[in-house]
Structures are given as C-alpha cells and as structure tokens.
Length: 390
Ligand SMILES: Cc1ncc(COP(=O)(O)O)c(C=O)c1O
Image (tube, rainbow, N blue to C red; front, side, top):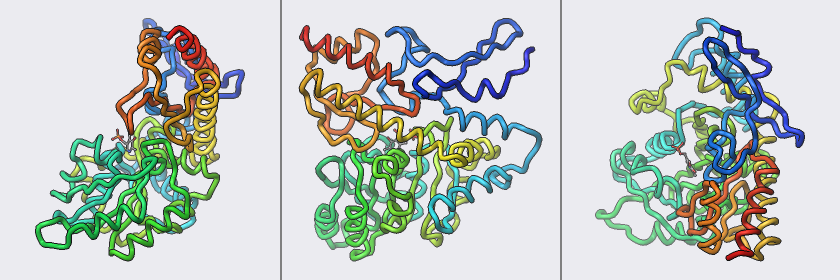
C-alpha cells in the first residue's frame, strides 16, 4: 500500500489563495491523494460546496496536519499528553489569562456541561429564545443540570439585553419558580450578529447585580472575533464572561470544542462531569492536537476572517441581484434573507442545500472556512437568474 504523503494531505491552495483539504482515493491497495475540488456541478455529490451549515466543511489543512502529526507513537491517555497540555497553554496565551481548559466532543455537551457547572437543579438559565441551547440541544442543558430550567427571552437581532434579563429575573420571586442563576449568550448569535464589548459589559453588569453567572456559547466565537477585530479577552473575561464554549468544529477542526473557565473556581470537578457524560476522550490528543494546529499560526482567525468575507460578498451580491436586504446585519459568517418561494425551490432543484428554519425564518446561508469565491458567485448567479424568472 502506498504511504500517504503527509504534505499533500495538509491541503491544497486554490488560485484564489483559499486552502482546502486534500482527498484520499483508494483503488485496490493503492491510495492516491488529490486536492478536493472546491466547486462542482450542482448535484455532483462530494464536489459541491453548500451553505446549509459551516459544519458541512471538511478539516482545514492546519488541523489535519496537526492531527496526523499527533498520530505518532504511544502517549498518555485522558488528556495527560503533550498535545493537550500545549493546546491548553496556547488557549491561555490567546485569552491572556490563566484559565482552565477542557476539550469535549461537541457543542451540545460543551454548553450543557458548562451550564450544569454554573447552577443547581432548581436554578434557571436565561437565554435568548433563538438560542441553540433552547432550540437545538434536545433538552441536554436541562438533562445535564438535573432539571435547571431554560428561561427564554426575546431580543432584536438574536441578542439579549439588560432589560430583557431584568424582566426575567424580576418576573417572579417566589419559591414556585426556578431561581435565575445564569445568563447564556451566543457569540456570534444564531442570527449571525455579534455582541459588541459594551453590550457584553452591560449584560454582565446586570448579571452581577442579580447574582447571575455569564456563560457564552461560542460555537462561532472565531467569527465574532474576526468580525469585531478585537482581542478574544475583550469579548470574554474582560467583558464579564465566566465560561466560554469555544467552537472548534465550525472553525475547521474535525471535531471538538474547548470549554474555557475564566473563573477557575467554577471548573471544580468539571473533569468528572465530562467523564460521567461520556465526554472524556481517552485518546484526547486527537481532540486537542487540531486545536494546536489552528492556534499555532493564527489559522483559526484567518479562516474565520475568510468565512466572514464570503458572507459579506454574498450579502452584497444578493442586494445587487435581488434588491433584497438581509434580515440581520451580516456581522459574522451567516446571511439570512427572505427569498421568494419560487427562488428557494429553484435553488434546491439545482442542488443547493441551505436551511430556512433557523432564527427568524428566511433562508440561511452559512459560509465556512473553505467557502470559495466561485461558490458564492455561482449561488448568486443562480439566485439572480431564478429571481428574473420568478
Ligand atoms: C450556536 C450553536 N451552538 C452550539 C452548536 C453545537 O452543536 P453540536 O452539538 O452539533 O456540536 C451549534 C451547532 O450548530 C450552534 O450553531
């Protein structure tokens, strides 16, 4: 069997300078490595890029290289390995503070276990009504906290406000209602917007006033940092965030999120929570090494910046082609637009995959770390043509 060439597996750079994964093809006992195509004919499975989710993308070259590099020899298990220690240290450097770091398999577990460590079973967790924890985690936050209740609140552009939080906290003060204990924010939000530091600070001040902890679902934290052009610390602990679930999957990792405790006292026994929930990876190096890959040379931010730029290109092209405004400001890597149903149907008939049940309705187009300019332009050309026919 041919030995894979690790360099060639690390990625392929398109003429536009966009790196994308290589593909392995097995024929008989021969293994061939070739660049994965960025764009294919609609309907060509495997070749076409889509806008349904940023988790449709493959592994970014930096993460893949690190993953392969970690596949060397025997190392200690359950996180007691060099890769995990170094990735944790890099995260501490990135956040400019001595935080506690845990690597888990996915965002639902990260959020649920982090929230469970901030409250008890009779507590309430204030969230936006569109929050992933509320709409897309199958009750996991309640399950892992043994019953803490999510208390959803409304807010423009997918964001909570101090006023909305005060309304929930002061709604009831009696023994029959769960006691509010945590505020959870999504950064970037499910509507593709971002909280600015002053908004975060105002929320955190309100939270402190009422004795609430602040959790951040950062499945798209990288996109928020890239969108705001600020230091990660300014959007987290310096703004009053106690715990961040830093998304790796949507950033180009194969799998995995990092739970970052800025208030280290809140991390007490967190490793036990992870173990009990089936989230303590025995071969932890394969969760942590890809983090190292994207953190070492700033690839995490470069990829997020690219994804955001593709979203802005799409939004600008949409306005030009259809005159339709986006439903929310395009602060990160998501574009929401209410397309005529004939256009949506036409896009689906041409093979495009995208969702229209997320946030406040409309079609959602998510851009990933590897979304190619040509893919955006091809989608725009199809929307333009279908709009003229509709
Ligand atoms: C805002 C948000 N939080 C968390 C997650 C993580 O979910 P998963 O458990 O699928 O990794 C997602 C994934 O879509 C998300 O969009």
